[in-house]
Image (cartoon, rainbow, N blue to C red; front, side, top):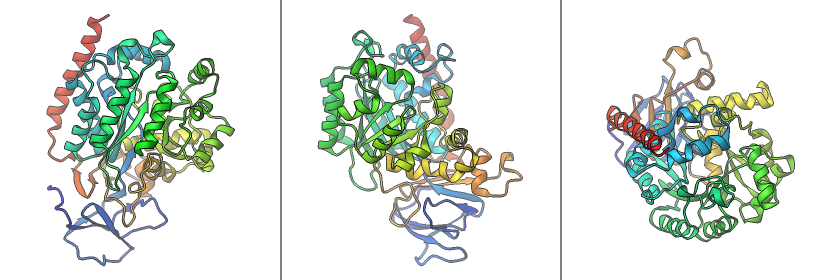
Length: 460
């Protein structure tokens, strides 16, 4: 399977089912040219444009490319880590920070590649990462991620994370995992200058992302907001993931987390937040009025027993709700289509089965994630949008006996995409990333994970 040649016109024809993310039901499929969608085809119709390539989708459920709004790629190296099992967030972090401090460039490159490949194979076309842990020797962590994403051909929104408030100053991270504020600011400006693409169709974007209120200073939060508005980039952080965080903000800043967010210049439409579980009704209203986005992370929230995000109330208030897999050590995976199913079922626990559908969950994973991260060019299958398309077959035993193909995709537990198009190019075919030696990658990744664990053990 070769990649598309630029400006060839491709008809993804007559899908078994299609979710466009809009009111248009393009039963006849979609037409792409170059990196754009140029036509939606009605049932039993043929395209108006001359067609170069026809992809028969009669056995495929077609969706917009899934969009991951929150992740920590490096954590693929510490899945099911023994010392961190059966712990809630703060204790879990304190256990793993010393391990992660041993990351080197090779480990980081391999962990990034594995996370991106796992997501691509699950139908993800745009991946965001929140990388905030930059020990000595890993100062070019984001550069490494940019290179990996560009080589794989996946759209990436990479956030320059930061930690400046060590545990000896009242923060959570150990001192050897933090950086000075000037170092963080200088590197943020460098990354924006070198890599951020502001235009529609951008393949690489940079956002600024202090880890959380309990790991950076108030001054850094304020300066991040100033730079983000000056350079017109997005901002991201963890907020209201646990009650512990709320208590921390009250004790340290004298504010609840949303009040603190407003005090440092973050309560605006350049901000999207990870988790966003513990908001009260008044705070939800303020978040919606400000145009803030939230990345719901259902599997992680269950694994760490953090709580359940209030998706329906948030959306009703105008908050842009997206979906993220979160870290591969708090999930412990990077599977986007699997996360869609988790989102639907966890939200049903809060709202009831009649009030959360499979299309709600698909909306969060596509249009919602795009909006949360400030993107209007991706997230739906519409004329003029980027040609990011995921295609799933229903030929595994888990789907046998299903009747509604789109519902079956989520309810029967799809795990892998058959084909994935990103920016008009086929990147996944027959469930595999084109041109990738997966076996070799996994051998090297497993060796890096073992080396990281041995390094941590030697430092005890």
